View 1 (cartoon, rainbow, N blue to C red):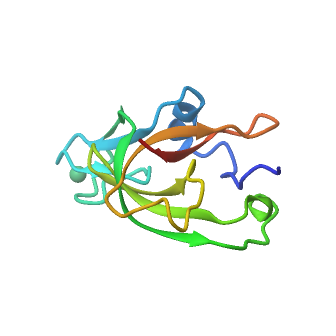
View 2: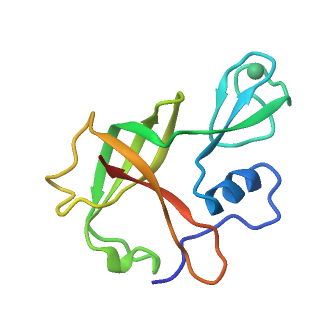
Length: 137
Ligand SMILES: [Zn+2]
């Protein structure tokens, strides 16, 4: 299966996130000025504009906020997946993440809003960074 699309590296705003993914760490940022959680990774706080952000590692647990099932996708990285779930997951540390839900035998029936999920990292080939996805627990 072809790799998923990746940012063009070097990419200063998100590279620490992807380096964490290589170690199976789901990383997020917290503003050192106003303590807001910042996700997706970026150079400045979305609440106060401060550039003083620090990196933290999530425990990788969350709850499905909402989801949709994609039944057909022509992108080569997704074409062979069959039906798959795209979801927003509310991660316990306080950020919402767009991701995939994996491990459901039938994603049209086996995934529910409010379901608890845990992160895992989908390996890519040829040195590309692993992609965080979530699996029901
Ligand atoms: Zn801030």
